[in-house]
Length: 61
Image (spheres, rainbow, N blue to C red):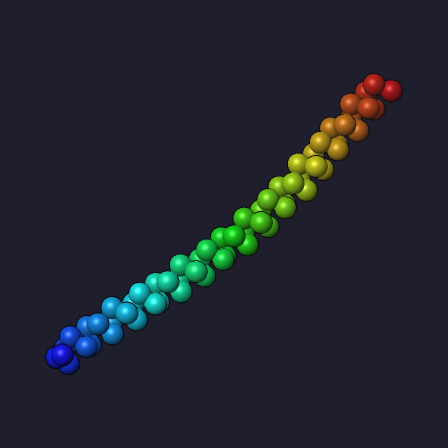
């Protein structure tokens, strides 16, 4: 096998490994950010509805 072929094969393999690592890190960060966003949204929605219920109860009383 020629040396240029070996270099080309090792370049392609290293790029595939690097691409896979980048995809893995991106997936992990996206998963973490999604969980944090959903948690914050849940807290915000709960607080909003809690205030709405308090307002309705004040009006009713």
